[in-house]
Image (cartoon, helix red, strand yellow):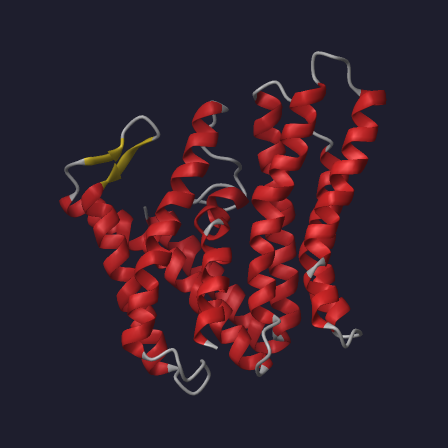
Length: 280
């Protein structure tokens, strides 16, 4: 517990320090790095299940999927060109995978290779790239960066709130076959903490966030995002259980691997992006 709290404090210090000195470029680098590390761990779990994904190819496409849209937008006047890159890369990755699988895999593993390679690309870098899309909104870059941080804080503090509430008042199991330690009381606590954090950030940093994100609206939006974060966390737990893996890695003391860090963000990022579209 102590190591998890210390790791969380260190991580937030590193993230905030990087963003303060390097701005959106640091955010893109962090998202790209986390997407690659998470996909690497995902492919490792797929291999434990008997699949043989094209790991190196998938990681390369992951880098392009998360990093390329932002930097291409700096040189292109058409925003739709850069926004369509991730979808185009998914199609290209599927074509390359299908061609390679006919030559490099036998009949007992071809379908699994396609499913594992493309499933990882779709589930991890493609969904995480919506954080990049938030950074690319037609607004001040500082405002976009603050909004992206707001999403991350809402999702990750849901984890913290759920953990603390579960330890103190947790009684009823949320999904015992998937994650035995999670409780309904913890989930409610996580959602309430997310709503409080979302409102507090909107109040304290109102000059940096969109004017439409008032504290009451922020708290309201944080509720569905927190619920999605819990679902996203449970999906990662289901994958780990299927792969018979406790932690996806030992990258972060007390937390685990990169997947254990990004799990609650994967489904939350696209939902947040589309919610923000209605606030513009």
